[in-house]
Image 1 (cartoon, helix red, strand yellow):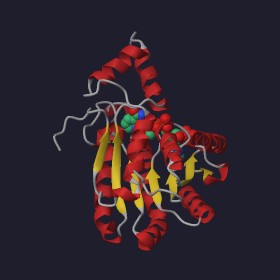
Image 2: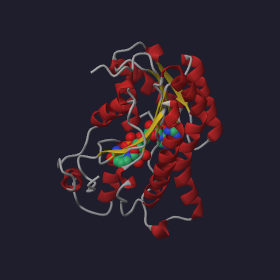
Image 3: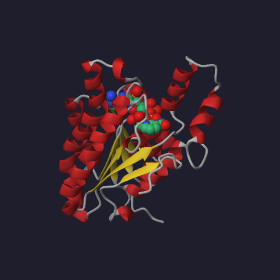
Length: 270
Ligand SMILES: NC(=O)c1ccc[n+]([C@@H]2O[C@H](COP(=O)([O-])OP(=O)(O)OC[C@H]3O[C@@H](n4cnc5c(N)ncnc54)[C@H](OP(=O)(O)O)[C@@H]3O)[C@@H](O)[C@H]2O)c1
């Protein structure tokens, strides 16, 4: 299937590793010109080199921009740079690292604020600053997309992930509202909800658990896998393939949905 992504311009946030990096690589492979951001210039420049190499595209089709998505001023500059560099913007993928784990007594008000800045406000501000460009793209030929990377926690809270569970619920409300307002323009707005997927964040969780137990990495992963229908951990490229479809020209009638890529972890009927 031709996804109709050739020469589309995509901005992928949180893309120096993990899901963001896999998404940027998949979109570059499908023909997009891609701007990627994360906090540190050296890391994001290396990621851009890796994306171009793995996708087999010219280095100038991947732009690295250092941007901390908890800082609105940096977002404004980063989105502006991407749109200037490539002459517009058609696709926004919001993403960032996940917040720390913990229970209700583990976080003070400042830590709550930081968690919401990282996973809720960053999403809202990325959308706000990308919208003028995306509206223009939608007016040109109707192919403009916002896709927000959140978590299966949006549908089924994870016990020690208060900050994530709360921020993701906020993103869901924002996304659905935005999809209604922007629908008449043709700009689609969806969220995509990863389950356990093999990235640095998952390795970090393994280490956290190992600090309080004598389980091996394989035993910990097997415990997670046992909770989903497919009985295995997902791979970043499996996640990225679903992203590529949802931002493609072929997904023009899909908006306002929360799409789980979790191997059947969340046990909802609809
Ligand atoms: N992997 C899973 O199993 C899983 C499951 C459910 C939900 N998720 C969610 O999916 C998202 C991506 O997860 P991942 O597994 O890909 O994590 P990851 O491997 O840790 O990657 C996180 C990315 O975000 C960047 N980042 C972190 N803070 C940032 C900031 N303030 N501004 C800009 N970039 C920032 C990191 O780059 P720098 O550090 O270089 O800035 C890195 O590129 C997270 O929200 C996570 O909670 C993941």
